[in-house]
View: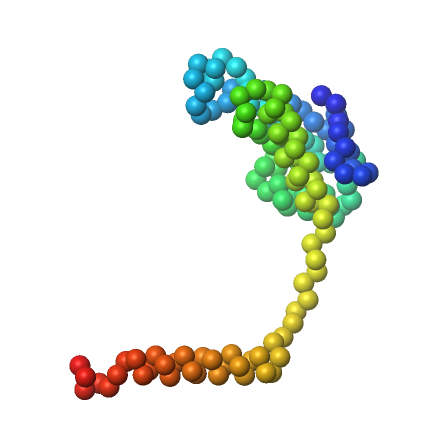
Amino acid sequence: MRGFAVAPGVIVPAAAIETRAVRASGPGGQNVNKVASKILLRVDVGLIEGLGQEARQRLQSLAGARLDSDGRLLIGSQRFRDQPRNLEDAREKLRELIVRALHRPKQRRATRASAAAHEARLERKHRDARKKRQRRGAAEDW
């Protein structure tokens, strides 16, 4: 298998990818018992070229349980009944994951509600509480 470009300057080299074809699970009739159409890609995250340290850490974080102890990412595909389409699907999943890792999340800034917004919220709460008290009626109604 040859490597491929994910984004400008980011390349997954062929040396980083290990491909295996196995039998898929689920329905498929007799075909599922004799054809290895499911694809498993094992990608060494450390060998992806053009990926900065921050993006590499984000990729590892996004990968979660799909990352093994050796730092390799496992991606599988069994959506289709034939191997080439599953291979392309697995590569697309890898591409999407790397593109998500390249995107730096926006830094959150702590903000406070304005005094007017705070007062309006409290007034709404008091109004709703009054409304609910009126619905209850007097104790002698029981």
